[in-house]
Length: 343
Ligand SMILES: [Zn+2]
Ligand SMILES: [Zn+2]
Image (cartoon, helix red, strand yellow):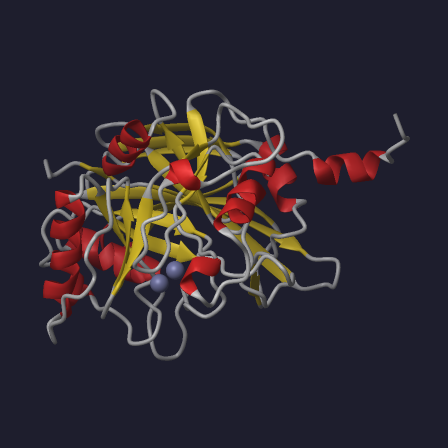
C-alpha cells in the first residue's frame, strides 16, 4: 500500500463515529434532473454515501426519483438509505418526505396558507410528511400564513443555500424568531437543517455546496418509515456543525451534552464554513429558550439541563471559533422543543 500522510487520512475518513441509534441525514438536495444543478442523482447520492451520511432525500423539483433507479459504485454501506421524496415546487416549496409517488405541485392560490395546506394534504395522500422549505427565501412566509396549516409538523429552520437568509436580514427576522412565534401560537412544529445543494462541481464558501446542514435522527431502525415517524415526534436535532453526545427531552426538561470528538471532526470539514459573526466570546454556549424566544438560562460549557414551567422549552448550542483568517464563525445544534401544555 502506498504511504498516505496522516493529515490526508483524516480528511478522507468521514465523521463516522455516531452511536447506532442516531442517523445522520440530509432531507434536501438537487440533481441534473431539475436543469439548474450540476451533478447526476447517482453522483449526488454517492457523495453523501462516501461521507458517512446514513440517509438522503433526492428532493428534486416536481420530480420523483425512485431510489431503486439510483446506482452507487463500489462497496455500498448497509447503513445508507435513500428515502423517497420530492421538492414540491409551486408558490411555496416543501419537501415531501417518504412518499410513494410524485406529489402534484400545480395548486395555486393567493392565500399561501392554502398552498401549504395543499402540499401537506397531497403529501399525506402519497404516504409522506411535509417539511416546509426555506420560509425566508424570496418573499418571506410569515407566521400568520403558516400557523393556520393543519398537520404541518416540520419546517426548515436552517437551509444552507447561501441565498435563503436563514438568519434573517434587514427585511426579515431570522427563522428562529419565526419558529418561536409559531410555537408560541400553539403549533407543534420541529426545525430541520438541510443543504439544499445544487453544486458539487465548484466548491467554496459562497457556492451552493453540500455538507453544511443536516439532521441527527434517533430511530429504532434505518428505514424510511421509522425515520419519518421519529422526526414527526421531534426525536431528532438539527445541526450546522455541533454534534451531541447526550440528548434527553423529558416532559418538562431538556438535558444535553456536546460530543467534542464528533464536533471537532465536523468542524474540520473542508465543506463547512460556519456563520460569520462580528463579535462574541469564543467557546461553547448552551441556551434554553422558551415562549417569545426568551432565553431562560445560558451555560458556558459542554453540558447542561433545564426544567421549565412555560408552555415549551427548546435548547440551542452555539460553538464560536476564530477562523484562520481571524474572522469569527458560529456553528449550531438545535434541539426540538418539549411541550408542557399537552399539545
Ligand atoms: Zn426550494
Ligand atoms: Zn431545493
